[in-house]
Image (cartoon, rainbow over all chains, first blue to last red; front, top):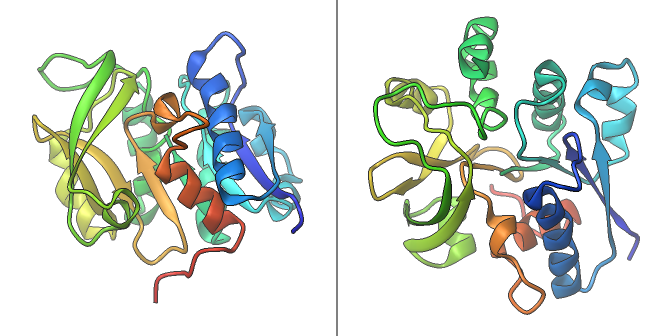
Length: 93
Length: 140
């Protein structure tokens, strides 16, 4: 099976326990399912760029991460809206 | 604050629903009541929703690291615009929502990732990954 690409919408902060746990929990889940999963953090400002749709197309699932206030709330909302309208599996925690 | 701005910026009811997810931590809550900062919380899962199928339980314990509560005035609007209110805490505060028609769309006001371990991966994350991988049947 090919690698599952999960886009994590958010501004990754290695000092934020929840962010580290986000990556770890995906690894746990992938192991449990016997799949390969790749987590790609997508910074919130980048979600306002014109190529955001192309970015989203390449993802199998979208995770809107914890950690507001985000660098770009607008970006976060745009990303979530796209995930919803493009019927991408979506979780926000 | 985030919620207020997003609320005024998004007038279409279908758009407004999305806002609840990102304004989770640490927007201060807009209601009187102690903000929740961290620790464990017991949740009641509504029967028949996706979370009920994922947890296979009607009561679960989860962890927070956030400071947010949904203004109860909006609950009716959330529901009438198509969101399923799927989990509540012991104070009756909304803690998770779902979009039932979507292939997989769950937003939580708690952090399941905080309690995931390699030995016990969190079921919500597993199901999300399974859905992303196309391993889960979409709802009819």
